[in-house]
Amino acid sequence: RRLGADGRANTWLGDGTAAMLYGLTTAAQLKNPAGIHLDGSGAGHIACTFANVIAHVSPGGTTSLHAGSGSLATTVGTGASAGFRHVIGITLSGAKLYVTEGGKPGATDFYVREISTSTRHAKIKAGTGPAGFTDGPLDTATFDHPIGCAVSSAGAVFVMDSNNNAVRKVDTAAEVTTIAGQAGSASFADANGGSARFKAPTDACFIDKQTS
Figure 1: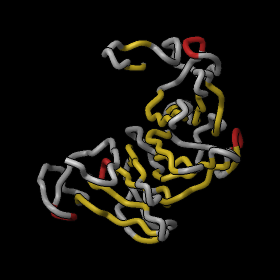
Figure 2: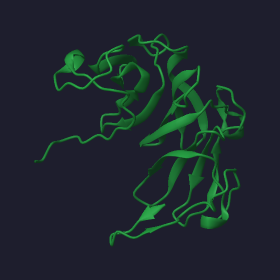
Figure 3: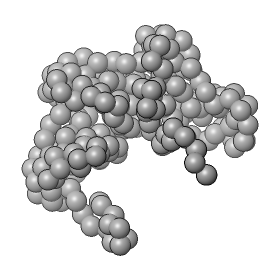
């Protein structure tokens, strides 16, 4: 749906059918679209959770496949040869999309994926698969149901690690750190770093400079 400046909501993409059919605006079909990111031109990408694909949408509203075979599998590949397991959060930094994988209840594999907007190649950015709460290098860090994500102007990816009740940072130095919250502590507390508390955080945005 799209919300206009006058507050009016209208259907932009999809006809309400839970399926994948690429096409123009309301002639298209989407299966559980969960995350969307639009650039300044109006083009963007949509994470379709139960379809296990990333769809591209043009400024004119035409959808097409960007990456994903549709099969439930975490596979490094390009375009339709890539595989995902319940993609949910999505954000854009330059020519790279970052996508969280495994946000669905009952999921068992948890990753942050990186996808090129130009070549459509998808790879694993961070995570080992099984649920956990481990900071460290990208290939040993673990997550538990990462959902929302946002990226800073410096290229760091911030992940809402929902079942860990924490905000995680995937930095440009190839490390994952916990910047706020603590696994096993689902509550609400304003504080710094590990003393702060969240209860299943699900979405994120990033503002580089506070202005008010």
